[in-house]
Image (tube, rainbow, N blue to C red; front, side, top):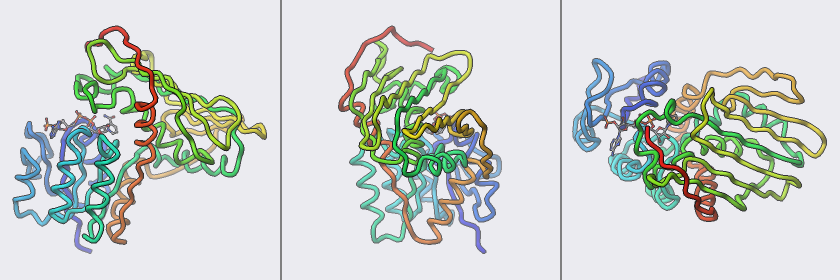
Length: 311
Ligand code: NAP
């Protein structure tokens, strides 16, 4: 079968670390272009300094992965959809809910696939956790998503700009997992967002949730100033006494303290398998729920000003 020629737009950390190897490892995909204003890319693959320049070149491209910061994703995706390219959007898909809704409308009737990617959902342990919680009543939940921004986002000033999501950039991964495993609706009811006095996006957040299928506290703690190793954990107790813990960003599952085995191909290989399957089926997958939870935290959240942040 003819390979599907794909371009990567926005060549930074995640493009180099995950997208390039996942594309190389998929038998149907061929990396045919990169876009980077600084000229970064892969040896032997044409590199363009803007997506417009890439779209104008005669490359036989069929698809793109857009791995820029979220603020510019909508405009780039719109141009690519209008050019007839299938689009895979890194998380968060856009900065606002209206933008992603508009992209979804734009693909209708065009035979173009649009995929929102939530990489953390693709951990096999997440599917196993969803199965364990299906139909249960929830007694309590504690999400702890603490990491060192200097380690994971070195020098990425965009993350602290308005629309950069701040600590919700990793926090949205926890929300994406919750949207897979929580056995009912989940709503933000209270939030405190802590903004460094010199930045426009929160560096920490404490969030309380409610749910019609839960009786006790449902809490999320997000923090970018955590040193000494990451804590990306979700602990849930059910009303019938099960204690479920997802550790290490959703990659490890324990039930009642016992490690559960969950094997799989890895987050990004799984995302690209899904993308190719969607393209073959001429379908889109647009899931806005993790972004909705973030938007709700910003809509409801109290603002607290904290110490200035510098790299
Ligand atoms: P990054 O290292 O800053 O890379 C983003 C790249 O996009 C930059 O290197 C830049 O390359 C390009 N870019 C920046 N601003 C642009 C603009 N205005 N127009 C066009 N291109 C622009 O960021 P990243 O960590 O890879 O994150 C990118 C996205 O992936 C984010 O949405 C993030 O949430 C998501 N993600 C990141 C991780 C992670 O661990 N880092 C994990 C999963 C998902 P040029 O300057 O060369 O154009």
